[in-house]
Length: 166
View (cartoon, helix red, strand yellow):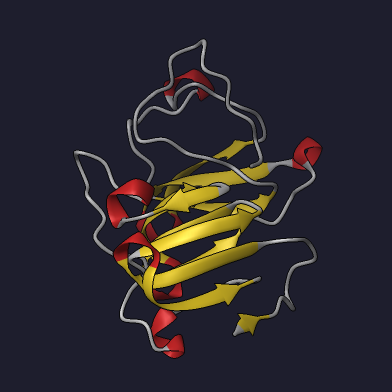
């Protein structure tokens, strides 16, 4: 069964499985999925990203820890999400990263949750929050107005290139 794309225009394809190592029930998607339970899955245990870049989310409705999924095979959860500090044991929603006009990337970061407190505008690549003039080590919430951004928990080393879009 294929879930067809209506919101995005592009070529994305991801095949998800309800068991590790590409076993069990499978479902093919070409657009976002806000909750895999709507398709009879408790969670995604393995997947193949056939085309496009995707963002996976720990919880339904694109909530919780998120991770970038590029073309390739992900035989189990630890292959696609988590780190030593925060291990992911499930993925219940995902969506393709719609290609953006990278010349017009814009994101607003906020000091506190729910878009409150001091705010800052980003339209370029920065190796750290401090490099852009942000006083805190953390961001409480953010809104992406245009483009695609990849954010990191820790500052980047200066020689590692990062692109605005995926």
